[in-house]
Length: 269
Image 1 (cartoon, one colour):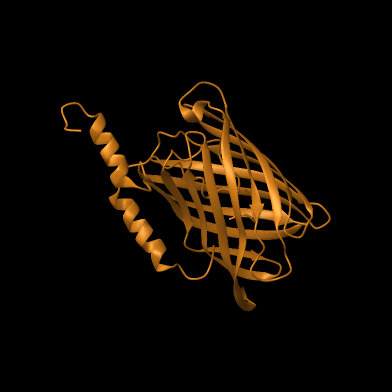
Image 2 (cartoon, one colour):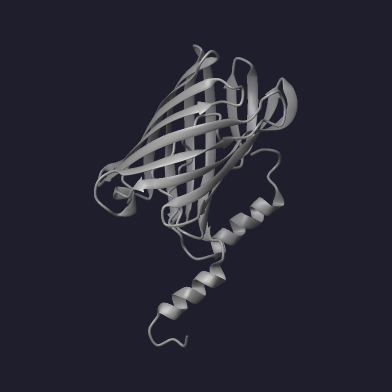
């Protein structure tokens, strides 16, 4: 999603509980799509939750410095090729000081149109994501809508994801977002990553952005990431640091365990 698409106030206690729960549940492969602005052509497995969490980040531009904390994306697998996505972030102006507001919130559906290399098949994976942009908690913004196409291809040497999105923003401007993500080999424990994107919010802002970082896969279901981003928005510099984690777990682990147990030979049904 574009740079203005990623929740905030202080990290709530339920989020800590979710992290703890995720470390105690069964492994679920979680391909981190933090720390990017774009996404991949894959969805969470049916009945599984994937959470992308940035406890805190920092953005500096001509208007001053802001704290992004937390930024959250929640993905839930509805079926083998559909997932629901809910996201948002909190933003607090540090210099000059200002109130905390909930920004960049939205609800989306992602659908895999053509299964490919990300689904352990041959050829590119192709997906679409569409949904509603919710108004910010402060200001005069309204509702918006977005529609994106995503193409991903994985090779032994790495993975590339292309994103193209069009939107009607919360301020009711037409918006175009184009992104390319390059990752190192998926088998590496620590893999380098990079992203470039171009975004044009017509009549308001034009952005060229570059990001470089690392993703550290702790286990099949937990990954940490760190990245720095430099952008030019209307020829003015924007610098950002990002750090967070992605984790996954079955939403109803006891039910999935029962199903798994019934499929094992020699066990009572």
